[in-house]
Image (cartoon, rainbow over all chains, first blue to last red; front, top):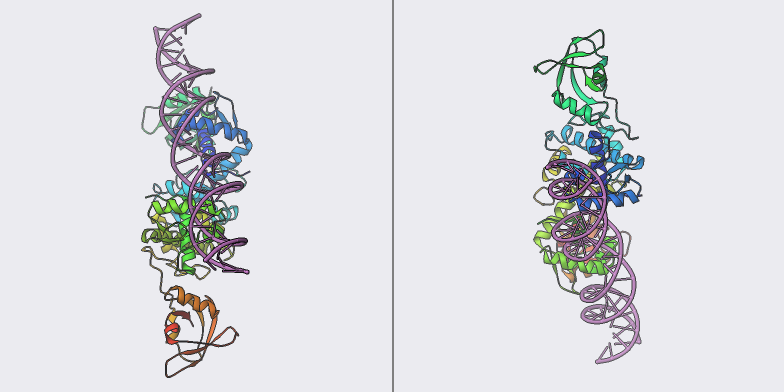
Length: 219
Length: 219
DNA sequence: ATATTTTTTTAGGCATGCCTAAATTTTTAG
DNA sequence: CTAAAAATTTAGGCATGCCTAAAAAAATAT
């Protein structure tokens, strides 16, 4: 089935919100992102649901179906590849490309995007470090590992989280552990494998092994 | 003022029809090109006229205003530059690029298109040999010359006309002199510089110096 | 537990850009 | 010059995707 420009934008935005929060996505959060009124979003979610691209229960938020996710990943793939093109080939700065890529991501031609991918050397991340899905919609393995697998005295950078429960994320926020934070493992306790962690020159903090298992880092 | 996708397509198509026929463009010819019903075209022509992009008199056909021409030339520039990109960089064949370029021509970013122009080495023609306007909307000089400046026994091809009056074009039509016709100058009369002209194996015809001055050819 | 606030949905409208059917104008043929 | 044919326009509708205002449901506070 065909997708209109507006539908593609909704699916993309729902996908992006899902990356940050894997639970149901609220009408309001979509409304904020799309800069359209909540009433219009409600309308559209119902239509997307009828087309089988989202699961949607009135008042209960929305979730991409597998088909919806496939479409969204394709848009994201196109967006990120065009961003690479704009920065690498057109010599734009990394902060100038978003708006243009928002337009280019809707160009419909699988052949073009695959040729572009090859032309750019099959990049794995866009100019902002976000992963680029391959043509089968598979996100590349960026070599992130769990903090719990690191040895003492390792330096690394927080790249993501392996779970997204509210309590877990609230804990990270309280500890001032953010995406991109530079970390250093000062000590690992032999008994419970808890970690004494230094965060960019702040006061070192203790985190449990359970928490460390859910923090993705890159060395 | 902003242009919608539909408006841009209408202006582009009116421009292209004007290249071939410099008189007023009929509603029906636009309808054929856009694959929309004549009634819809009528509607749109009125709207384009209100926006000042065409001169339009009911039942009398349509003509681009200067502003309309400027917009149309910009679309044509983008279309043709993207076609060069698709063939030269993406390795498409020349007959596979039209549809994709129809989409890419609506991407709005002057900076992008000028960078693309530079990236491609400021090409003067697209893969089909059509001239590419520069960023000021000026079409390149493709080295066409007046048929009247050629010597006897020259072979050449009709590339354009230097004036567009109805009588002149009707004359060309009657003589079966069309864009692309392969010509050969058989004789030039010393007295009035009239020319005996062979047209692709048809019966040779006589044309006056006045007519020859208004025929643009390439050797 | 209930009242208030916030979130979400429904209802009714509007602009764009298309359609069909009917009316009107222009062109062509006799 | 007039009648038929062709081209064009007008009128009324429809789908998309947005809006505002009002109603309904869910969340929050007392």
